[in-house]
Image 1: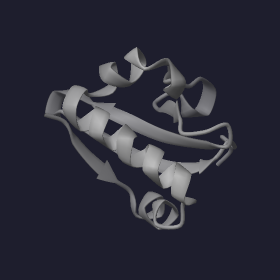
Image 2: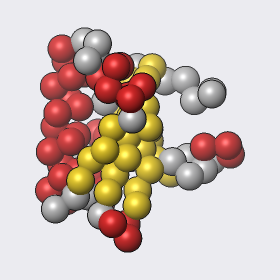
Image 3: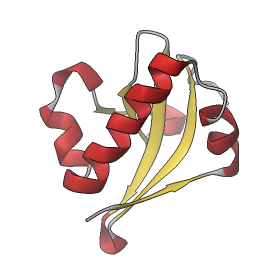
Length: 92
């Protein structure tokens, strides 16, 4: 069983997600809790991938063409930390 921690900024965005993306995020969370990041990679529609450059420590999953979940995996404590849920812009 995996634990999902959401940053303060991520929670604020999650609470304002459009209904279809909020539903997809709930499915994303259920998969992560049950199977971890490996479960996400098995479902092609999430397009789960490791990022490059300044965000190389994060992974990205697609909720829709517009929305992404950026998260970090801490395997030694079986935790997924959601850094942000945002439109498809990877600049900080």
